[in-house]
Length: 85
Image 1 (tube, helix red, strand yellow):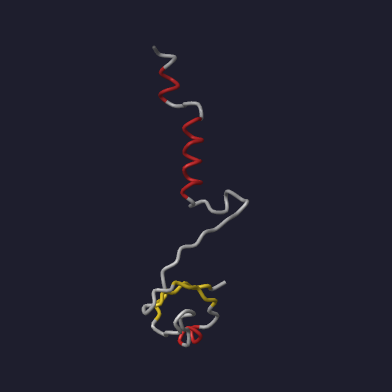
Image 2: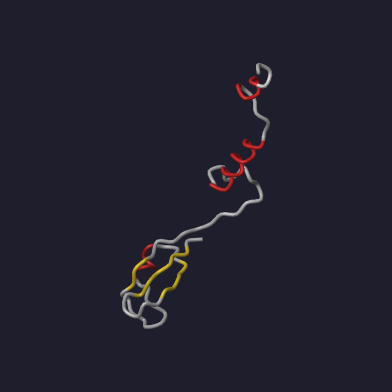
């Protein structure tokens, strides 16, 4: 849903509105003081999923993958060194 956050530049009220069409935004006023002197805020968002692979670029998912690799047994030179000591 296109819900946008706004700041009223007159009274400082922070509010959000469901805007389906850019034309609706032109008539938008502050719910507290009814001023039209408002500014759209940059908003953050979040995503949720029960599928961990769905958001592969999620930093926490990447951190978990790195942790798993660190816990796996060593292979390569570290593994071979034990036979040649």
